[in-house]
Amino acid sequence: MSSLPASEGPEARPSGSDLCTACGLCCTGLLFDIAPLEEQELPRAEGLRLPLACNQYHDAFRLPCPCHHDRKCTVYEARFSVCKSYECGLLRRCKEGEVPLGEALARVERVLRLADAVRRRVPPEDPPRPLWDEAREHIRERDAADTSPAWRAERESLVAALEELRVACRQGLDP
Ligand code: SF4
Ligand code: SF4
Image (cartoon, rainbow, N blue to C red; front, side, top):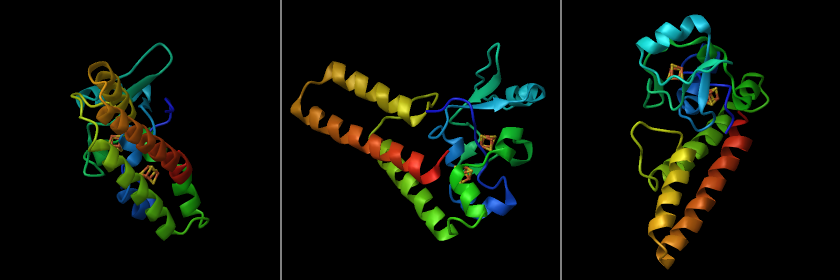
């Protein structure tokens, strides 16, 4: 996973709203694990109780964003500059007419479907972390506790599903 670029609300950009409304994946932690903040945005992020990830080089908050529900930004009016400005490669090409909206929506739906399938196999953590991290932890814990052929088969299948999802994200959305 990349660590710097960030996310945007599904409906954050009117000209891209048809696609982003159906997507919202850049808020979920599937494409990036943190989103950068402007220094002056820190108090607002703290007020929203976002999980901050600040260090001497940058201010940021962790994804998945807790303000993201049902593919929507619940703090749309108070979203951050990176949320307004970020465009994945798929959205850019869709807006330029290079990728038809129907094809772009199909790519998004495929990623969502693959992510849902993995999600059903990986117990959610509290607080949530990116699906990749939770899946890695799930596999590590099961490896330590279960040496059965059934788990080995499930493990192989889960790793394959994660790889399919990773390729779909990279090639389909081009974050
Ligand atoms: S504030 Fe809104 S647009 Fe920004 S990451 Fe969170 S849910 Fe997405
Ligand atoms: S991943 Fe791309 S298409 Fe999806 S909401 Fe973000 S910018 Fe829009």
